Length: 445
Image 1 (spheres, rainbow, N blue to C red):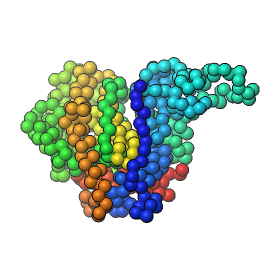
Image 2: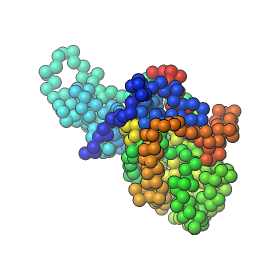
Image 3: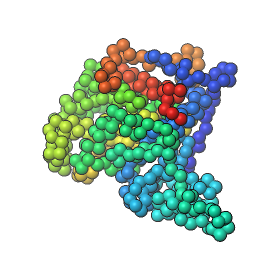
Image 4: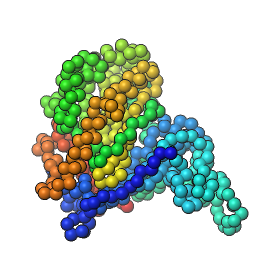
């Protein structure tokens, strides 16, 4: 059985006088106080106001294709499961027996037509309905078994197979929450000629001793944390995926951009750079079994211009959908905060429906090469996050600088804020939403 995550908030808590911090004073234009990343009281507020207060990504419908398939997930500190019932519907249910509160589903994934609470034997079907109570005759006549189904989060929604839920009944609808990020999900899903992705290739998990807000969407670090990867690409720029990185997409003089899409959703937009390498990438695909058919189907379905975009991006919008979902390279990534200085990251390789096994195998190998436990990039990220967390414990001059590119931001008529690839537009966008949700300006609670 998978060991449950143990949640705990570490010291320090509050300010020097032992009082809880007013979070509104912790985020200022171009800088943020390091206690946002280290303080236990701030972390507890984040769990309640963000992870228990807005929409969270739960999983993808392709993870539970059959009746009785389930995946266990977390919404902040609260355990849930995503399960497909006999009626074909995918539900999000609280992983908690209605009798005495024990978890009814263990492990990360599996298939069962019935969920049995091991405490007292109450049994639920795959829709969450209570179907058996041992010793039913011991209950009063007014005991309503039909009213004792597994509870569900107050709000559940789906967009193109991506299942979201919220513990807050008063959140705006999912479409409003996603905003401009909907088009980014489309870029991933539409890269499949069938318009469908499949999340069944396994998972990479990592836990690092750093704050959850450190994960991803930083275009500034690549030349330093991943210098060896850049050097390897440059040594053989015509081989494989390296062909799409010729010219360095993370150089400020490149056409790559950082974007704040609103609602905390941010992206590293590599579109222009990837399009400029369409020919190299499509040549690589043509040498892969099924590649020519894939390119032909994409042109036939989307037209030449849209197909070039989708093929060039290869299902990688490189977007963070606030607060716990990232679509980066060949993966869906879930962020689970555990403590102020501890975070779990779960990474699911994304496969395309309607393509050859060889194309999907190439996607998995590319994922493993950077993000696997022996990958060239992800272990470096975990290391630098832990070093950052360690350094932030120093409280002399505690403000962190997030002003890079602030003076050259471009504000679009659609509300999207754009900067160069190394600009901290993404960090400012995330912290702006953090402050909205953590203060009275956030969503109704």
